[in-house]
Amino acid sequence: MTITQAVAVHATGVSKSFGPRKVLDGLTATIAPGEFVALLGRSGTGKSTLLRILGGLDTDYSGDVLVPERRAIVFQEPRLLPWERVLANVHLGLQSGPNDSVPISRLALSALREVGLADHARAWPGTLSGGEAQRVALARALVREPELMLLDEPFGALDALTRARMHGLLQELCARHHPAVLLVTHDVDEAIVLADRVLVLSGGAITVDLPVAVDRPRDRGNPGFLDLRSRLLAELFDSGD
Image (cartoon, rainbow, N blue to C red):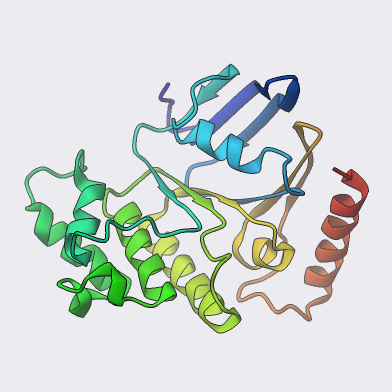
């Protein structure tokens, strides 16, 4: 279901089970338009399950989920089609694009330009580095001007330097396009660096909801950063499996 401009995501009483195991149990969460929210939780707590529900990939749940019509998902794997060139892969994000008056190829090339890969438009995915492939995935997601962008550990497979560069790129893109964002991550530092607000999922529900009141750019040595990091780590350790 779609919603008004007051919120980008409104999930109420969301429950999801896999056989006898209940992963989400009456979960409630909201995300404001343009807000960047990070979702932390131990493995198996249902983070990716919630993301798939919000993205419309999983419809077998109970509860109410209200989301924008234009959504995009970026996974940990870029999921590029190896038999299509880079530009054609970005085209995939425009099968129901926001602006039919502009040629798809022009919109896709513009998106590649935003992620610094316009000169790779004719390249094959197999020739790209891990960071380049994920930048193509970001271009494919953003080309539709989504109102909600769902990121499922998109930088988890990247080395530390490439990951830091991708953080900077993501921040620039979000500042330019203003989507609401839900980032699923295991990395507490990544959550604090990127997000406006951090949630912790445990026992099928949101147990922590904290704003990130640290000035940008965020210094990992900042006392506020360290305090929030300690609070989130303590919650994650205490939550158990």
